[in-house]
Amino acid sequence: MPDSVTDFDPTLIAFVCNWCTYTAADLAGTARLAYPQNVRLIRVMCTGMVDPQFVLKAFLEGADGVLISGCHPGDCHYINGNYKARRRVKLLRELLTHFSIAPQRLRLTWIGASDGIQFAEVMQRLVNDLKALGPQGVASEHASWRPQNRRLQRDAIGSGSEVIGRKP
Ligand code: FES
Image 1 (spheres, protein in one colour):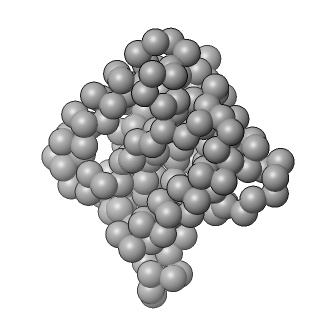
Image 2 (image 1 turned 90 degrees about the vertical axis):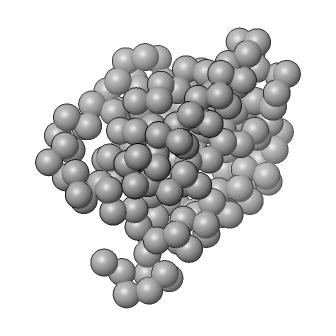
């Protein structure tokens, strides 16, 4: 357990849409904008394909926060995937309370392809918020569930998404 909030290094799993937020992340990298290295990006083709199971598994695997980020309303390349994601996040937040996970650990944002600066700012803000919240303890309580949750990345990759960076 960290001694203070500043010692705590949260892990943020970010499911990002290929067409918007992933491109913004790429732009932030190209522009050498600094953002926390705690962020693990998982590229998906659309936020609408983020299965709620992926979010729950990420938390049970030890993520301190999960972000789903994609195209602005009206800009989804698959017409309404981001609206589906928005509805799912609303339901998932309610579900998280039953796992004793603070609902504010799950975030949804819209970051367009040209918003590299916004991407870096949002990541910094989310990591700061997670530091303030502290570690989520559910993963350690359910450590025995972890082996089966190793399938998170495999499931995500098998469904056409791509894991960027270190393993969560
Ligand atoms: S294509 Fe980006 S959210 Fe649907």
